[in-house]
Image (cartoon, rainbow, N blue to C red; front, top):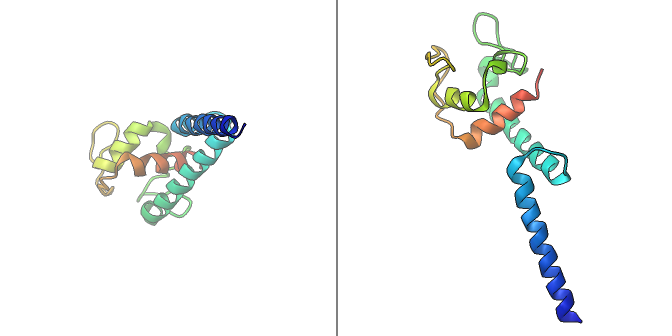
Length: 124
């Protein structure tokens, strides 16, 4: 009986681990694991944005007229895909390939730009 219970527990644990891996890979949908993971990604992005973007784009990320743009989803971010945003942070170039004169080249990997994009997309 104990062997059967141990085998059942091992099978259940393996299934749960596989489900968690599948859930966290997409960060979409409605499961609790996905919600926690998406929330953690957004919180991480908030930290990156606060440390690297707020200084030029203001604490609310709505920018300073004539100096820096609004980078929320209702501002400049609305014209960028996640890949274009990653390229901007990595190279300092806009989606049309033009170098931004005041944008620093952060050289960020996707592990930093993706959470930052996710966070900024939550802001109006």
